Image 1 (cartoon, helix red, strand yellow):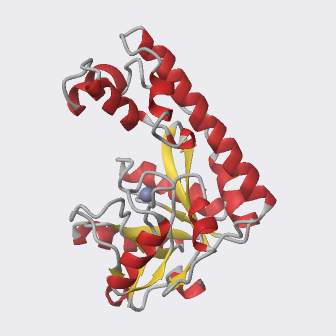
Image 2 (cartoon, rainbow, N blue to C red; image 1 turned 120 degrees about the vertical axis):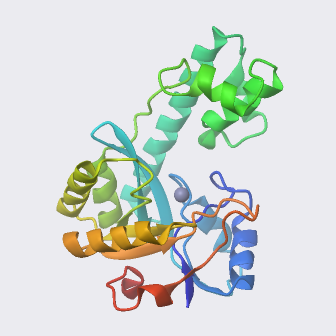
Length: 271
Ligand SMILES: [Zn+2]
């Protein structure tokens, strides 16, 4: 069976509409899909009105911070109407917007005038991020390419490196649990933590009620997957899998075959 418990629509930084994404998943023989947009569940208000040809699990990918490190936590099977979830989403929206305005102000000194307003003329104001500023820096000729935009203006320690005031790690886990969802730590190897730090993160995640670990995120070397499955056994976590699909560019395909994970405790057994 093919399932996909992590992908993005154009309600965050994906390129397909929720309906296009669902249709592509269906054509790709995916049987269970969760759209996990960054800090919002807007995709579900769109899908609510359409006929769905496969099993949809509600989802969200929250941005948060653990020990000053940016971490993503997925909430699966959440009640999207829950008041707690809605207020968390609002607070993330404010954090994202304030960060974007702050980046914009700081880049004025480097010649990018009124960046935020220029970006929101064509982008969802709730979703403005550093990639939008990179594109603008390039189109205005301030940076010659993507690399330079990050190296000179947006990367770590540069003017556009502004921290967001995301909900705390505990708040995100509480919110997912209180809205009836399953918290899954997304792409654990993406944060480039040492083994001991990763284990501390997992211990904290379990302590706060974490249930799943994403052992497969898109294309990944099988050694990494085995290592993450091992960590699941060590920490009593359930496995989760997802493509982290953003756009049909051929690099990432929707759908992960669950047959490679038979015999392991999984989050999809709970769905
Ligand atoms: Zn993602």
